[in-house]
Length: 388
Ligand SMILES: *Cc1c(COP(=O)(O)O)cnc(C)c1O
Ligand SMILES: [Zn+2]
Image 1 (cartoon, protein in one colour):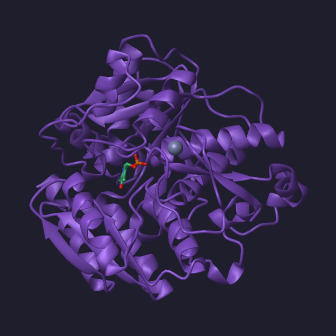
Image 2 (cartoon, protein in one colour; image 1 turned 120 degrees about the vertical axis):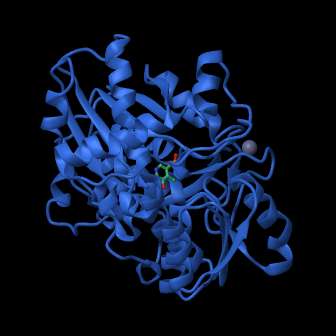
């Protein structure tokens, strides 16, 4: 609701809202949704939220769907922000540490948020067939939402994708193709075939709405912390959709008058064997080169080239944040550490934030007494092979 237009995130070109879009027609970069925030703020207020449903659709005035009948939902979002006091006690500094547990979403990851928005919008525009390249959880989420919407789901995944992701797609009716290669190779196949097949490409940031679904993590964080953002956010970064979305949400909330200008330091966490954002951050570059021979058991982080790289890097820098790489053995070990301390069976991607946090304490980036939020982006149940 309240969408005024779409705006290219790089060149600023405006695109008409009530039309199906992928990338900017001028420069080929992602489009972001712009709203009439004044109109949205008339009915959506911090007080009105107290009465609303426990899903991301509580922020409906700031989501793109116009006709409510088009919403495709399993009740995604409004996940708990859990304190992690036992983990915090194991650190050399006193910290106010929280885990935003996105593993509790439908299809067990925060990909549900993005797909709920993207598939609802595809339905609004009359799309019948969708396609996505995925290294794991995006596929499972898309298969589920497409099935619920009555759409044909075409999924292209690297052949070494965790087995749970392949099986869940098959069992929810998707057409699954396994590709000998990376997510970027899967994306190329879709780009080649989509026109002839009549597929709408829902690759992350190649359509404007997945980021809108994921931005609700930023709204929830503010609401759950009583409209005061934390000092630091650690975010396991693949395509960066969630980080970009939260950064957008913070701007929208400030314009709505709900929060002040203070922003959390945004920290991008990646695997040392696929760390294009960390490398570009350290080199001072705005765009990230493709990371050769990308490999990690944290399949959601295996994105060697992200189309929204400049948006991730801009947000990290504007926030005074940083980017950190951890090894696969560090992130796998952290799953058990968090699991035993907090009882949360995290995805390896989410667990990567703990060794990253330790590094940031060791190098003095994080100081005592700060409020720190770790994003556990999915559930460990999808990655059983990683614990063999
Ligand atoms: C996709 C995924 C990520 C990366 O998310 P982006 O927002 O694309 O950076 C992290 N963790 C898990 C579990 C994922 O499925
Ligand atoms: Zn553009």
